[in-house]
Length: 321
Ligand code: GLU
Image 1 (cartoon, rainbow, N blue to C red):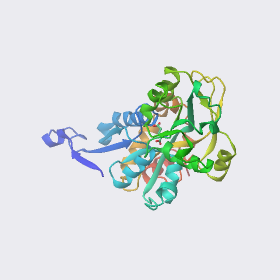
Image 2 (cartoon, helix red, strand yellow; image 1 turned 135 degrees about the horizontal axis):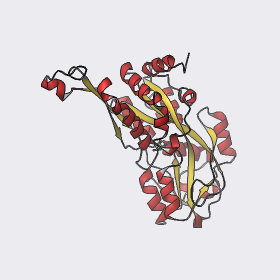
Image 3 (cartoon, rainbow, N blue to C red; image 1 turned 60 degrees about the vertical axis):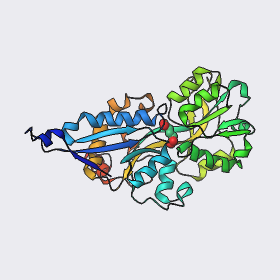
């Protein structure tokens, strides 16, 4: 759905060249919880897009949502034009596999660019006696809210481990923004968040009470990573969060920016142009974006076809052939 409105200046018939005749196109970006990285990353995208509004007439807004799977579904129904989504769920949505098997392939799903890496991050209370991922069995664990990417990924991991929700003494479904408080109030022993680093939510959990980040590295996880193109082993650097001085080994996915083939080429072109022409500023808007490299952004973790509007910009910029 492209919401097209006549700008008020045009409606008043004031003759300012380029504005009077300009239509406004509204685009909404679906993100995640406000203490994650999707939300500030979406905000950073909109900030750069909106700066050139007088030239292209696009007004960009960001929405906090349940996460990846919600965003993909909302793009499919036309409720959102863009969204941030984990690379594993982009893959499954386009192919109609895993969680998306019942809905069938989302053939109009289009990749725009990839963003930051997202390690599958497990944080446990220091007093919970959790030193490895396997120790979560029998504990009170927040497995994530339905609709989030991390919940979907946790479901896959649980299956690979031979676990069900009954494996835990309690399995909660809190959204990311409520996890830190629940952990520090001792309502749960561990939280799981597939998120870029540093993230506000993990910072909150690790500073508000004594916690440790837990390695997620065993045979089941290694086999998952080996078999699937959208997973890779990942490291969360030691010293990034209070209580965890050593590097943490886990696996991870990539955050990607996606849209639908039904969104106009010109709109996607302008969005991509706004980001890539000012990539240094974009990277400076959140520390998790600092590592972005243009050549990787146009290919890494993208399993749906590139949107033609994005492709046009990348070709002009010499990023693809
Ligand atoms: N990876 C999470 C998800 O797909 C969101 C992480 C974030 O908001 O930064 O639901």
